[in-house]
Image (cartoon, rainbow, N blue to C red; front, side):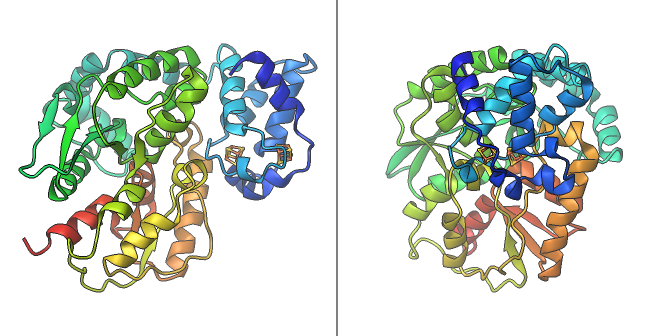
Length: 391
Ligand code: SF4
Ligand code: SF4
């Protein structure tokens, strides 16, 4: 974001406080600086040189989970997430607390192959440690090779179209089987699937740490790779990636991957009842809205409709809460993150939930930590089950 635009966005705040109603971090800690209004006032104080960076000020700015819930309620329509990203980039040099995270994130996104090799070597020490610390929901076993290293085309006999998959880091490292499900479903519906080589991290973890320049480099590489493909759509199983490459890249580098689509809007158009079988009745199923799907991409109805169409009745849930993951947020603010998770899961348990369906690998990581052995499924697994259960 250019400095002039940043200042004009900050100046637009009329201090109405509407944004606080929806802010999960303010809900957890109701001090002014834990909501959007307070954060914007602090950033204005910095820009007008009335304030200087301090550790507590940095905490307020870096504790925003970047969910985007506030922007829709802001009367002047301030792009609050972009303002926070820019504010973080101005603060990154004074923010010592996250310097190691910054180093690791920068290194792993710049040198993904080497990072993968190092992670593979130390996975049997590192992952059990992170699991014990509650930072991983299960003990991870990395795939033998980094999936994104392999350019692949999954052909079909009667081709209806071509789709590229933007895998994203969470699916690549933690849930590679979900990508296999997506490929199966697409092939089953007659789509040839392309996994292009050279896909990089979408850049969101870098931006969350204030590393805008580094994120710009990755965004340009992803745009170059995906925009030259002759495909009908670019699908990702992660709404954070979809939001980044479609909606946030134009703000970051002037152009986005226009064909990027969320899987639920794509499959609601593509699936018709002759292609799948109704699933056996399941009791106590809730759908968890990923924040970036709901607030960022404006998608709520589509996944619910798909789930209903394949025979599952969803329970209506009271609350409508963020799960508290937020990527880097859950590493930097473990207690806040856990508090949000407890409230979110608490609401689901109250309604008698036995199974949680969502459509974000980040939410899956977080919800699995709190779900007390209740299954947490990705929407693509449910679609795959409905398509192939009789075969
Ligand atoms: S993005 Fe989310 S956490 Fe950050 S200020 Fe807005 S509502 Fe609060
Ligand atoms: S809703 Fe918008 S204008 Fe109102 S206080 Fe929040 S950021 Fe400022």
